[in-house]
Image (tube, rainbow, N blue to C red; front, side):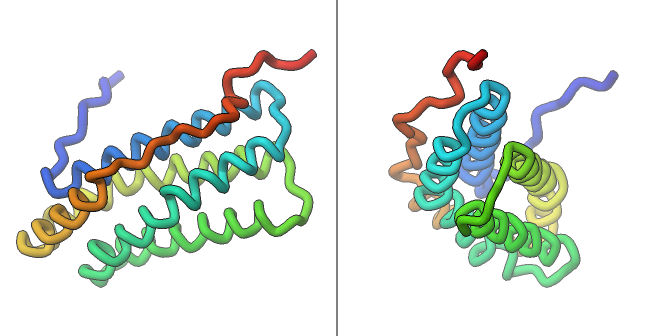
Amino acid sequence: MIPNKPLKRSQYMIALSHDHHLGLLFCWKIKEGLKKDADLLRIKKYVDFFWEGHLEQHFQDEEEMLFNRLDDKLTAGAMQEHTVLTEWINRLNSGEPVNKADYLSFAELVIQHIRFEERVLFPHLEAGLPSAVLENAGAYFEKQHQTPFKDDYPDEFWTMRKSG
């Protein structure tokens, strides 16, 4: 078995990698809540909190500062994944019935997307974008992260004991 080596990240993309760590933690919390049979309304409210406070803007920033700067299959794929994840958020908020499997599928899609960006897309962007574009994006991300998003959601449904 080959151990996971830490990814070498351009200094201009470090803030986004920090965001991705938050995203993985977000998914972990959803999955833990599902394992513990947390009420889906509690999970939905957390998903809304994270989307409105962080993830929606994160998607917009990536697209505007990076993905729109390189017209190729990988960036188009990443933007399509953002669209799919946004559609999932809209579905979870539509009022139509959802179940544990829906939240689990959503969390797994977010994890897959983050891994794609970190392992495939970001190295591709670092190699393919002009240094001036990366520097400009890095400065923007640093400014955006001067006050980092704090995942201080008060209802820690993921820590509760499993019912039953």
